Amino acid sequence: MRLLLKLVVTLLIFPTLIYSQQKTKFDSLVTSGINQIYNIQFDKAEKTFAEVQRQFPKHPAGKFFDAMIYWWHIMLDYDNEEYDDILEDKLDETIDFCEEILDDEPENVDAIFFMGGALGFRGRLNAVRESWFNAALDGKEALPLVYQAYEIDPSNKDVQLGFGIYNYYASVIPEQYPFVKPFMVFFPGGDRVKGLEQLKIAAEEGRYAKYESLYFLMTLYLRFEKDYTMSLKYSELLAEKFPNNPSFQRYYGRSYVGLGNYKSAYPIFTEIVKNCRAGKLGYSSWIEREAVYYIGMYHRLNENLDSAKVNFERCEELSRKLDNDKDEESGFLINSILYLGMISDAQGSRNKALKYYEEVLDLREYQNSHSTARNYIKTPYRS
Image 1: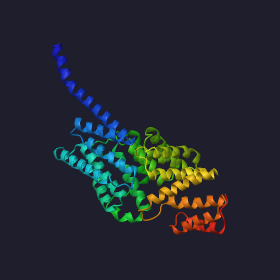
Image 2: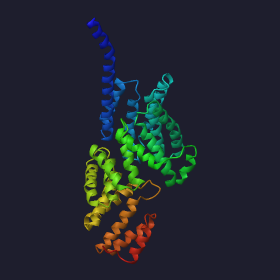
Image 3: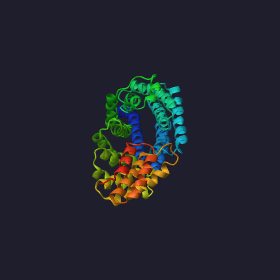
């Protein structure tokens, strides 16, 4: 009788143990792959998510996060569109895969969640490429899926990422970009404060969305809230966790610049330049341009004019190449030329300074660049 009881208990517990072991293995693989993506270890991430798809062929996570590898290729260089089609194909494949699951299991929360995520990222790509109508359509389709996933499983904190992004942007974007307002008439209103709160929940309690939520908090506090102390908090956390990610490093340095602390920003941007010149994955010319600009600012503020000049000249050189196929000149180019004129004046090269100022007047207006150049044409700059 005792033996029979043991056998029954074993048979009851064994499937639970197997499920628990499989879930632990699944979570471990997915978490490892996510960390590899954020640390710009794309080759490793591809292998990891290929293994996820091999071991868990009925779960959409493997396909979704494989697509995220190409999203981060794009994130590292917005101007490079070579990965757009690959990303769209992989997101569409994820959406189709989730739809097949939902045909048989209409309340499969994983399929609902990752389908919403895939639509959301397709919308983000459309927004990056300024295809606002398509971005709005994807957002309109994704949002109900996020709500549905939450209704089925309210304990899923990852959905707060979707809620947070929507609430924040639906509140802020129409104010910042009025031309987007016509696309928002079919959407519910947003709530900026609530959006930030939801992103913080996902960052603190999320299973898979933790670092993406931290990324949004970092960028939103820097770009829209102008709260550089908060952006520093999140960028420092991400830069230390993922030291190979130039995007996190840039925001870390920018946050110090926003606080006026060029001394702390200087070693961050110096490390970025070092990685760029070493050809490290993800470190492109436009990342180097930003870094040398802020290094130039650091030297200028410390009156190291020769060092400032070298960095602004490098920024000018990179900007001329990077701006070549753009509709307008970058702020980096305009300011670099203006500062080179001011440095020339300070070093007694008046004729050279005048040439720089005249060139500034030939470029578009940027942060009072024209009035500043005219003032120094009339009266030489003195440091």
